[in-house]
Length: 344
Length: 184
Image (cartoon, rainbow over the protein chains, first blue to last red):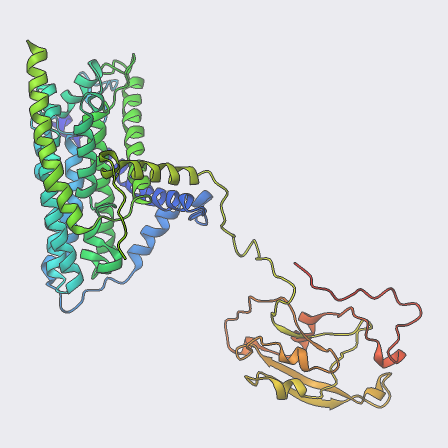
């Protein structure tokens, strides 16, 4: 019992630590990549090549005044940023970071996932849909019009796209035959990456994930030009920083899910990376492979953000309800037919 | 006027070709040459008639050219210049010039860099040079006195030698450099 707790606490600490570091550096990468795409240099004054910029930003957030306007509902106003950040941190618990680690001195290999749940993906959807509460509460408790409009948009958008998101991954689990994310990865390690056999699933999942994480081209909840700051207009200091971190943590989770479901998780399609690790080195390499893939998707997020303009609200809703939901249903039908025929 | 909308194919109506083209475009810009000027280290190029801070200049023999006629003080639109006139002592080699400024203050907080002082000066003693980043921690620091203005102005290498040689250059003077628009 005690070793179990200890191992899991160490795993949680490592995962949260790595995740928050990656989140901090994604913010820097966002600014850098956007600058490069616009023929600029980007932040380069703090530390070599601006690498200490996230530290400076964090310090700035800590020392900024925490404005609590008199017209806000103080309890929900304080609660909202926490609710926005925490679900993203929880959902990463079921994502397998690696296969297994053979730690010397331990009888059993340590699994590369914190919680090896059999309902993995359901857990992810259940928790991540709580994230919308943070945004709705923020908009409502702010008692001012722009946050309110932003949060209304956001709730409609996130609820619509959760349907697409959920339906789009159904064919993946039909093919794998399990909801456990570790088994999804092992299936891909043995057979083929699911992004190749389920391209439509993958495409709709990626687009819906963009909408779920409120990223451009679907960042209507915080559309700066029309809504000032959207749902976090009234926030400042660390409370704002928590929304900010929540957004990037959600990006991280979405990227991790894309990698896990469609791009083979920790595996590469050749030995020794296509089977669970038998040595410590390979185990660590698996985690590295996973992180590199996730970073690739994070770059894709940034790349898309600085390329595509924002959708109009009716376009967003039309895309979700009129196009993606019928397409996902059709995709489930076709996958079912094909899988039945192939199993015969 | 009716504008015929182009008929889009189904592939075009998915917007995917435009999105992919856009993604390719932004990707192409990543390795391109950057246009950022890293300001404090890299100064911007200043062209010929640039009007920076007004300064007082000395002639090639190190004499203050200003004779405190106060024309610049009178012409200055924001009244940034304040001159306290004084006389040159009788025994000095330039006693025939009679006047020189005892104190010459330009309030850089008021100066609008119009260049009227340079234009009006009959002695070519005041020039707008190229200093443009004028900043200080206190208002008093930006009251440039004569010492500071002379330091900023330096020696003006020009062909006017009117005090000693009645307008002609000295026999042994080096060929006077022509005043030309410099690009720094």
